[in-house]
Length: 154
Image (cartoon, rainbow, N blue to C red):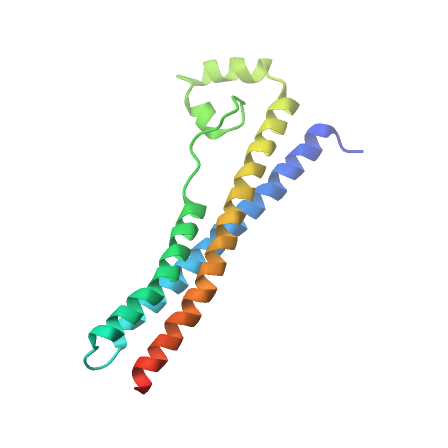
């Protein structure tokens, strides 16, 4: 039977993988948004003022999507809990010996539980951003391409 410590390490890895998935999704959203914006360069001929206004309006939801995707991938560099696992806390020590003293005295299970709790909150925040980003992207791209088609057809 696995120990509580082993179990918590597995939970930490599981949550960490979901954080990586969220970052990957955010990167895909950013790439898709910037690709669509870059395609504006390919619009042939003169673009009338009303067409420019329509295009700019259609870019608002895409910009919102980009905002949330960037919020998702921004690094989290602080931790409210002081545990011996978070890299930001480890880096605060002046040298290895100081850190080793703390680790030797630490309750490793409790530190790991704190870390799992913190990264779970990070994962939840990232997936909220992804959800908002995808919704904005969905409507933004539909509006964007409908407007582009209208401009090209008329």
